Structure formats: C-alpha cells, structure tokens
Length: 165
Image (cartoon, rainbow, N blue to C red; front, side):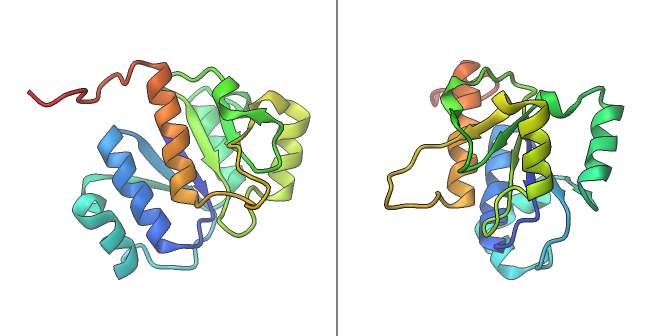
C-alpha cells in the first residue's frame, strides 16, 4: 500500500502519518511543496523515532508523480482519491494491498486541477469519509488512518500482528 500526501501543511499530521506508515508497512510519498522542514521537531515528536524507519519518496509536483506511476505501470485509474466533495463512500470501493491512497492538504484538499482530472477520467475513484453536517472534514491523519484500516480490513489485515503470542 502507498499513502500519498499532496502538499501537507501541518507537521504533526505528517509525523502521525509517518508513524502509521511504518506500523502497517506502507510506502509514503509526498507530492509538491511543504511549508515545514522534514527535520521539524513537531514532526519528529509526532512520529517519535519512526521517521528513521521509513524512506519517504518526494515528488516536486503531480506531473512528476504521474511519471513515477507510468514507470510502475500504473495510471490515475489505479488510485483512490479522498475528498470531502466526493459522492462515493470510501467503504464502497474495492482495495488491494497494493492500493494507492491520495489525500490533499489540510487546508485546501485536493487541488482543483487534480479533482477535475479525476472527476473526468475516473469519478468512481473519488471517495468520501462521511461526517456530520456540523463538520467540514476530519483531521488529515485521522482520515488517512480510517482509509488505511479499511484497506487492511478488506484484505484480512494481511501482514499485521492480529494478537500477541
């Protein structure tokens, strides 16, 4: 599984997602610019020492990420995109252990150009995590956790410790 963050803005969220990625053996990619240093103490505190356990792939922009996808013989149609503006519920999507999950930034979500491209090419890959009307959206790290564990649930938590021996 690969988690992709598009221009995350909050180091604590990114740190939590680093920790989650290590704990479930997922790859982590960051696309675009970020306003904090990957050495940021807030990021390290949230990720504890897990940030040493992962190699984070960095891409300058979405175009560079799509070139990487092409080398991996994948396209935009192989990706699950998460947005509060999506119509399809995230549990109504079929995931595999090689799924790629893309999340937009905390402040703006997926960029407009990408949302429009997804809507045109693969609208069924735009997914929503339901929330009450009192809430715009969930915290990024929480959203990633919810989505990741649905992927794992659909795949019988393959590769994870299900109980302590």
